[in-house]
Amino acid sequence: MTAIETANNISDAVRKYGVMEMPDLEYSLELAKQTTPEYERVSTVIPPVEWPAFAPYVKAINELKKQRNAVILAHNYMTPEIFHCIADYSGDSLQLAKQAASTQADIIVQCGVHFMAETSKLLSPDKTVLIPDLKAGCSLAASITGADVRALREKYPGVPVVTYVNTSAEVKAECDICCTSSNAVKIVESLGVAKVIFLPDEFLANYVAGRTDVEIIDWKGRCEVHERFTAEELRAAREAEPGVAIIAHPECPPDVLAEADYTGSTSGMIDWVKTNRPKKVVMVTECSMSDNVAAETPGVEFVRPCNLCPHMKRITLPKILDSLVYLKHEITIPSDVAARARSAVERMVELGR
Ligand code: 13P
Ligand code: SF4
Image 1 (cartoon, rainbow, N blue to C red):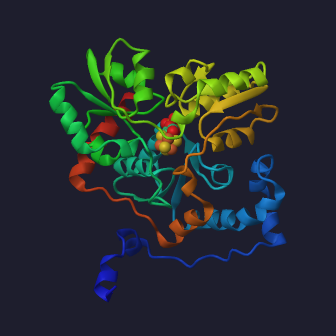
Image 2 (cartoon, rainbow, N blue to C red):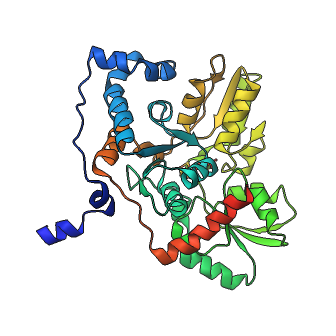
Image 3 (cartoon, rainbow, N blue to C red):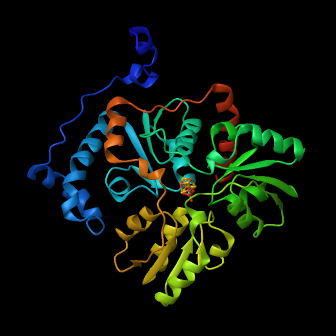
């Protein structure tokens, strides 16, 4: 790369804030003592032998985020050392979007997947938004393009388009309003129409269709994590663990949801466990969420099945530290796309006020 190319490749964030020194990552008894409060939060789900690998990063990240005036937003699927030890705010997609809209920080480090970081950038256009791994995608977001939405509009003229936040900014820009798993029915009904196009998750669309009189036109996108659950494995869990509570995310197939005692967003599921304190529970969703709740709910046993999201698991402590030191990877959205996508997200946030 030539000097000019290198200069052109420096991100706005680096120009504005500059890179920092990589902190010392040596583990010591002193460091063990300093990070005891953080370890105590996760001691039931992270064995002591694993803590020396996490502790230097936890300390470095917590110090650096203050120096950077950065805020760390973590989705409920982050691993416990991220969720409980370095996050400033955690939550489901809607809660994280609201945090992004109201933060006073200069920098947002989004510990989640790419569409979540884009949503933060849309709601906080003047902030630097970083994602620790640009490849942290989502099978739902990858299932549809802006051109697909334009084709649907041509096929169904005048029918409004509601899009799940699990989509790219380019897709949001073609839609009327966004929704998340926690407000999808409310958003669909808020439009006051008889028919809507609902994108891109066919299972969430089916779940919404069962709870409203509004006719739903769907798209055949699926979450690669939730589509793998089966009703048979849940029936087997009930047989093996009599009295077990089964709670599921609405991205699951309909026959899986039919087996569930409760269906809700990731935060809805967490609240359900904290409120109902079942003796045993299957959280039919991403595995790390069970670990995160287990750390806070002694006495509740978390029974399998659960599945891992390979995209969420790309976000690790070393990559988060790199993010803060080198200010990578900065989220940018072309301004014409951003303006249209922002209004779809803002309409959703406004409805919740
Ligand atoms: P929530 O909005 O319920 O957190 O869901 C996001 C997601 O990606 C679930 O797979
Ligand atoms: Fe996307 Fe599914 Fe992963 Fe959620 S769990 S980020 S919907 S692939």
